[in-house]
Image 1 (cartoon, rainbow, N blue to C red):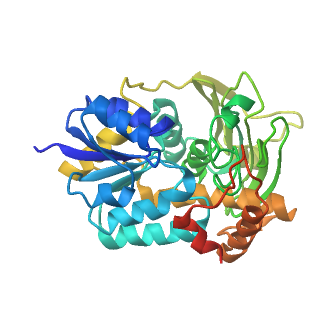
Image 2 (cartoon, rainbow, N blue to C red):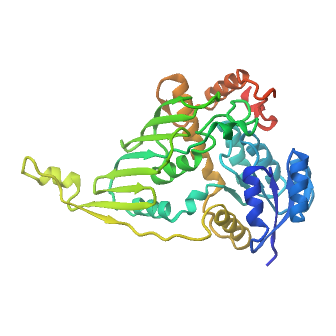
Image 3 (cartoon, rainbow, N blue to C red):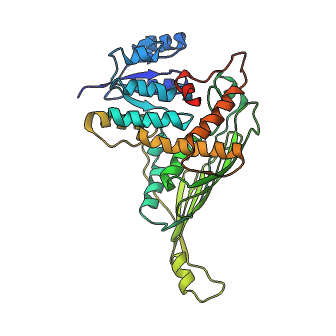
Length: 382
């Protein structure tokens, strides 16, 4: 079977990561790299034998690629992805699919219209722990879900933010922790419980010298009446993932790398109806839940699955069309925090576009560079 010829667009941090495993991946061939920083693209081309491009359109139109990985700053993801799709090129987009929902809506429509294979790089979906947690909930172990409590910090130092001019600005990144680090967690949040009905949130810049948020928390309400609390930041160290999902029949707990389940001997609903003793509660049995790990989890697993989808019609682990749900949650949190009131999902696209346009206009220059929103998305702010 012919190898899938890949181009990587954006060869900075994440693009360089993808290049690293593509070079030796079975079924793949790295044929092209692209970056607006010419020296960076040239260096990667010399290192790998791929051809260097400095404009994504020239790479996509070159005839050298069957698929691209889009690893540029966030604003450019929708425009580049759609350009590729409209030319029959398969696409993996880095997360998030976009900063605002209007271009992501158009991206989803384009993907469906063109029929190309389209994935989003939510590599945490390949983590055996979270896969098992999702299966446990879908299998009904917990019964009706009552509540979720999810904390996921990602520490970053000031030097991290200072390393690139586009980081931590409204004009060139579109947000802080919520659009850069947290999309993995908010994607998992959606995978576990679906989209909330309403979001009430608070964000702030707590530790760093940046103009966007480095801390966010949100209260969530789901269509079935369940509630939730979500927290993320780049201000805590050591960071540890913790999630607790409470249901009528039991509780599922993720603590770092451990997965535990508390099974109630009698459901809460049944116990309340039948119990006659004033100070009693249902019996509970805690047990560790085993799950499988894989040496090829992460970015490589998403890309390998993507190749199999192209060649064999395999089901995508992280379909691009699902990526809009994570963006929906992110935009709801930011909009609620800025308004100081709850927001109902789906988020009002025009209202969020107006908010982002205002934030972009007031965005400050960084390191002497005048910031400007990416051309591929700025048209949606009008």
